[in-house]
Each structure stands twice: as C-alpha cells, then as structure tokens.
Image 1: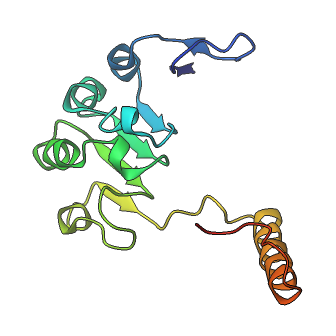
Image 2: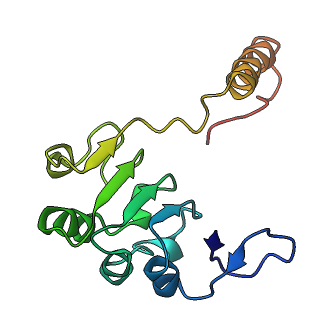
Length: 145
C-alpha cells in the first residue's frame, strides 16, 4: 500500500510516495481522503486521473471539489478512467451531476461519514445539551454562527 500527503508520517505502515501523479500511476485504486480547503480544490486533476488510467478506480470520500469532476466525467465516459465510487460531489448536496448518474462505471451513495452508533449518539447528546442550555438561558454548547 502507498500513500501521499503534505508530509511523510514517520510511523505509517505504508510506503510514502511524494508525487501524487506517481502515486496514481502506481495505483489500481486511488482513495481520496484529503482536507477540504481552498488549496485542495481539484487536487485530483485531469493529470492525476490520467495517471490512474483505464483500469483504475477513483474513490472520493473527501469533499467533492477535491476532484476535478468535469475531467473525471470525461475520463469515465471515454474510458481513460475505469471506475469511480463517490459519496461526495462538486455540486450541492443531494444534487449530483446527472452525467455521473448516467454512467455504468460509477457508484454513488450519500456521504455517511457520521453513520456510526457512537457518532450519532454524540450528535443526539449535543442537541439535547444545546436545548438544555437554551432553555436555561445559557450559551449554547455548539452554537452555529
């Protein structure tokens, strides 16, 4: 297994590849789990997609805008990329590009990053704590600003 990132992790059990295009070239499956920030917009560019190739699979669990979605769609349509598995999109939530849904080599599903019993229990606890604080006239535990 291989990985890349902004820096090498000294205790990582995998081989570090400093160049993303080279990582894609050496990969059958490229799983994207990158920070969603302005500097990662289209991190997975047409060049990275091309390096992954016609037998490659792109899995994006990061943020939709991390992948150049138009370049990915074009590569999927003309066979330069084998498959894609996506739970995030570069469009508003719940409204994926219709071209993605029409492709037989694409799997889409809702983003389920919080779908564990423990996480859902914490979300419920935060909601109740916020309600208790609001009803008591105290500051909210997790205010939305």
